[in-house]
Figure 1: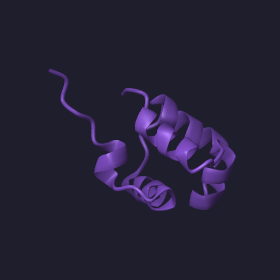
Figure 2: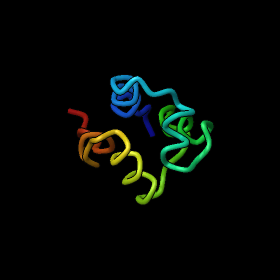
Figure 3: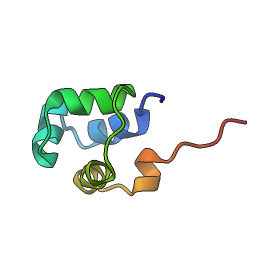
Length: 68
């Protein structure tokens, strides 16, 4: 699993800390960190919650482009 730089960039663009995003989606800061670092595969429910909090779609944040 690769790092989720799209999620990190979207969070930063909204000027949210990992802690603030974690509070919005009812998880720990460590969970947000692990998702961004590619160390944790979030559930679809968590993905949807993160997308709603960051005003993004699942495709925008979690779709991995195929390596060419």
